[in-house]
Length: 297
Ligand SMILES: [Zn+2]
Ligand SMILES: [Zn+2]
Image (cartoon, rainbow, N blue to C red; front, side):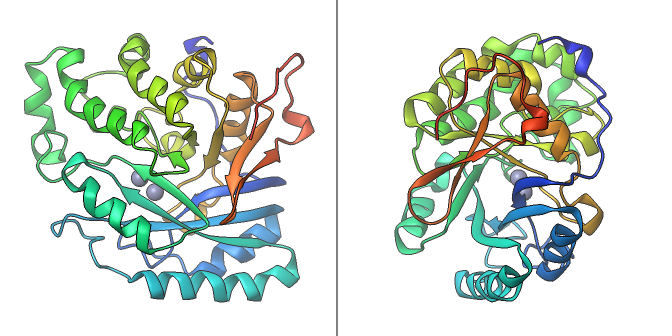
């Protein structure tokens, strides 16, 4: 995989089997009613959706306590009933913000509440150096290794926790460090992400290909193609893909490009869960790369 892919042209996805990362107006940073996504899915031929509103465990985070489990579940289950007759399957997921500080709370939440599908993500937690007001100054005097270290410690722990179906936007730290380090610089140090990638393989957690990066200045998916390729080389077999839409025009945005990154790394299926065992979702045949070895569910 070369860096020539940087700056790929993304466009709205259509005729794809699954967008497994979507935020509705039950997330504080989204304004999209669930039916808007479902209607877009009918229009564009996206067969299945996972609604993954934020679940946060730090009271300083806007998503903390924003919508209860019961409210979120009812919203999704009711929509699933409305839209199944029109050919769109809607699943109840969550994007749970991980940090070692609140891992016990997160574990207790997942023990009490059943989701169809879970994404674990590390965001710029309130005590972190990555909050926008201080990250530039903080990173200015640091090497790339030093600047990545606090994030990598959390994402590696999240990957090894075994708590989630998939790990969200594994290198979103690129977004936080944008302006201090370029994507090619970070992809040039792919070995720094290997402990996290190995932890995914060891814990059997899937790697998410998150296409929100196509909307951000770095212009590349999270994680970037070199990290997807390395995950595959390390024995990674399970991948998911989602647009991480927070606005209606972002629905399935860049999803075909994201699927293509997975196909080019050798994957032929996505891994999904619908509340029971994992199952495999085939990539469209138009995206198959000759000689791809196939991915297990
Ligand atoms: Zn996220
Ligand atoms: Zn998200």
